[in-house]
Image 1 (tube, helix red, strand yellow):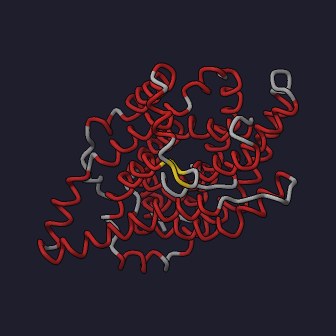
Image 2 (spheres, helix red, strand yellow):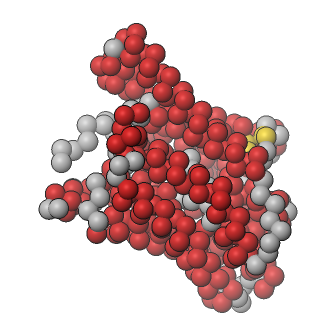
Length: 352
């Protein structure tokens, strides 16, 4: 397979460094300029931050520009990739999260975490485990040269399953049945992060191709958005961590302890899905994003449910926030691994 022709920009080349800088900047803003996050936190609807929603939309829109609807039809005719994503996300991930989080938070770290607080942290981890990624996977797919049409199909299937399985899985693992799912948060997130950018991307493709030609659209117009995805990601991190700056500074040890099972779970789920895709010899642009959907989390949903069930200052809410904290650096390491193994993956697939 020929190497990708997509140019790597300066910020993208040193993305890990910029991510750490933006996380630190966000924490400092939250600590020393609290009026800024206080103002931004009021700009929300159904517990979804509107500034963050706009930035995530900007991250996703460039990838939606690459989606050709004929490619979506072809993607649905490759069921193995959907099988890997679906089984890993819903028959494996929630339960491995429960086991790993219980082992560390209730057994290994018991000397440092009060039993009741450990149970709350476990609940937050369960919420993360039952909410595979909806929005950010488009960013990870973009950074690893994933197939945008197939990624869209994988996310769409995942969103439909969330509507039916999130509640019973969380109820089973938490041992409670009166879970109040914030449907407005769930539906608003899907609309903002999938439906609107997809519609905008499709409209842009149709209108610009009709007026300027397909060559202009694919080689000139799309190229104008090369830095938008990374820029949106970095600004999103500044805002997210400005919201959580005080929490992070006030709970350094517990944040570190909560992060351990979350990081282990992320690498485990990615390894299962990516390894399965290798075994089935799936195309690399399908395998990479498919593995990252489960590894990443729908943190907007997890945070919203944690707050509605246990309260804003609960251990469960803190655990979901830690999920946001560790996700980007860990997922960037998986993007890097995915890119480095592309050639070996392609050679393996070619032997099919």
